[in-house]
Image 1 (cartoon, rainbow, N blue to C red):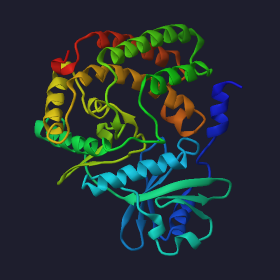
Image 2: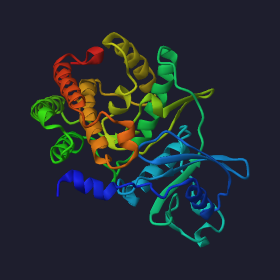
Image 3: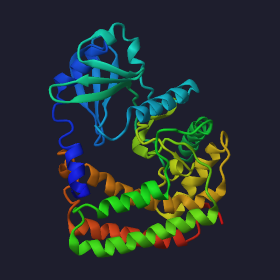
Image 4: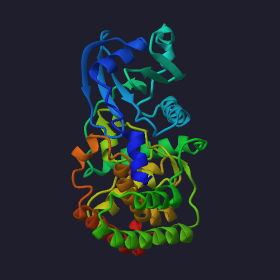
Length: 354
C-alpha cells in the first residue's frame, strides 16, 4: 500500500464527530461547564476552541489530532509548559484537569495524565487539554525594543529548556525533519509526475548542503525548544510577549527559535537578529557559530512543511486550505525555493559569523 494510502487510513476525517456539543460535553466531563458559547480558533493541526464557562472564565480547549503524538509526548509538552510557567514565563500552561472536583467519575472521560483527558464521542475518542486564554496582538517587528523584549523571553525559555532534554518528543535534525520527510513524500502519489524528477534531484542537493553545514560547524548543543516560534505564536500584551502553541516543541539548536522571528530582506533580518540577540544574551549564552544554521534550518522547514500537508491530505480541512498542493505549479515553486536555499546556504550567515 502506498504511504499516501496509509496516511489516508490513519487520518481519514479525524474530527468528523467533533461538533460543538461534543466539545461542550468533553469539558463538562472534567467539571468545566460551558455556557453554550464557543469559537473555533485558527488551527489546522489540532482543533482548538475558545470556550466561555458558566463561572465567567474563558478557556482554550485543544483537541489533539489522532495519531500524531503519543500520550507521553503530549504530557512531556505539558510538563515543559508547566516548568516555563513556574519560571514566570508567560506561556499557555495546560490545567490539571483532575483538580476539577469529581471529573474522574463522570461518564465518557478517561484521565491519561494530570493535564490530558480522553473523551468518548459517538464513534471516536478525542484527547484534549484545557488552558487559560491568552490575549494579545501581533508584535511590531519594526521596533527594536520589542524585538529585544521578545529575545529576552526566548532566552528565558531556553534557559529552562537547557535544564534537561525531551525523552519522548522529537529532535530537530537532518534525519528526522529532512531525509525522513523527503523519503515519505517520494513514497506517495501526491507529487505530479512532471515535477517529480526535478524536485527529487534538487531536494537531494539541498539535503547534502544541510548535511555539510551541520558537519562544518560541529553538532550544535540541543535543548528543549518552543519549536514553532513564529509571530503567529507570539501575542503582544501590555506586559510584553506571551507565547502560545508548544505543540511542536522539540529538542534542537537554539537558532530554531530565533530565525523564525526574522522577515524581510537581508539587511532588515540582520537588524532584527541583532536586537533579538541583545535581549536573548541577557539570560542565555548564544554560540554565534549557530548563525550558520539559519538557512539549513529554513531548508528543513520547507521540506517538512510539504510533508506536513501531505500527511494530512485526507483531512477535509487541508484540500480546502491548500487547494494548490497537488498542482505542478506548487511543486515547481518548491523546487525553485530549494534551489534558492542551496545558494543561500553557500553565502556568509546573517550576523557575519564565520
